[in-house]
Image (tube, rainbow, N blue to C red; front, side, top):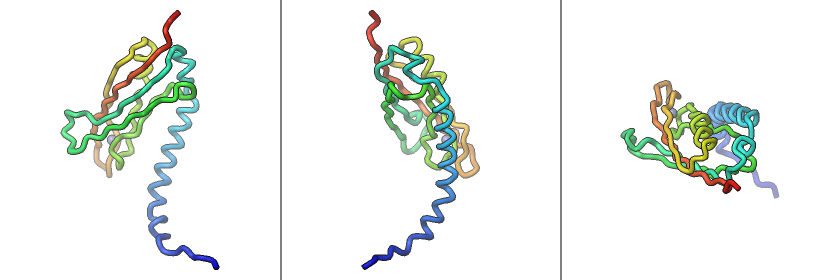
Length: 141
Ligand SMILES: [Zn+2]
């Protein structure tokens, strides 16, 4: 006996338009990451990198979002671009320069911020993202 799964198809189709736009942006980001130098090659002493990404607490956002990204040093690209924490925003934060500057100078804790230039339903997002990086390095012999 075959079971037919019906209903819900229109919901899937409705969602598809949005997902395709998002998928294209993700694919483009993947390309930029793939073409970037490897993190391990750029900072050979780096053992561990953890990034805590959050909304600027001074931004007055009702809900402050935070997420933690543990970077796989062995395979990660030396490219740090993060989608805006506002799910409806099309903005990306390119943290590559600030993060690489911290890692190349061997800092264990450093942070920075980035102002979103994306749009949320046609209006400026203006969200401020703050990152805190925690890095561990091999001892220099
Ligand atoms: Zn944004």
